[in-house]
Length: 298
Image (cartoon, rainbow, N blue to C red):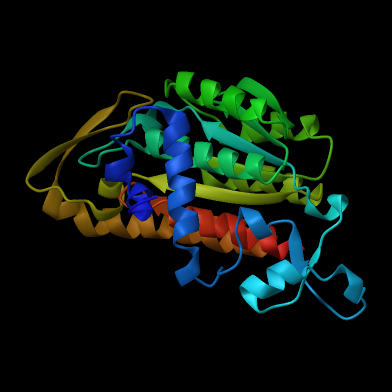
């Protein structure tokens, strides 16, 4: 696809109306750029292979893959290749915010979730979807058949960010529903008290699940590009306060950095992958994290 990597830019993908095409363009744009990354040779084509290691039967070496990569790979058994994934999407009203970017936090999260669903289904990995606010709203069990992608995309297309959220409670409600060890992918702005969220994540890790947190903030929430008198409104409580932008800029930026750093350190301590994103960043930053996590499991 000509200039496929353009579709990794949020400002470009915003112009693609159909969610299925967004997902396809993001993934194809990503795969087209893998040759220039540390993941050269790792694509949907090679997702069911692993590096040859001492003790493997040389008869299992895939010589076609060797010809393309100049490295020895063996075909994985089905039990080794399958990774069950769940996409958990925050429906809080704050996720609908954008200041000057083409995509809101919610639209960015939906596009990223759709791309990951596309990638997993094409790797024949079971994937499911959960949306939540203060409680679980939709639950779609994990499946690997091609029709699952259409079901996920339909739910994502209908989802809307409204009301308040309880990330920790939603994680607790979802945890007992997971029958097998899985990869949990959480999409949220995490504008909540971190400690209850961490407690819920510890329970997931204790149960043997892998977790990736995609912490999605608006570009303006990260850079604070405001000046003069600004009115800041909490979208979930509707409370509004006015400030002088120059007077609070540094304190605000320090607070955002401290929040991200707290999540990063706490996640690192419990073996959770933490991916800080904002709505100006290309989607491949998140997709590389997904592939890193997948490779680490095998």
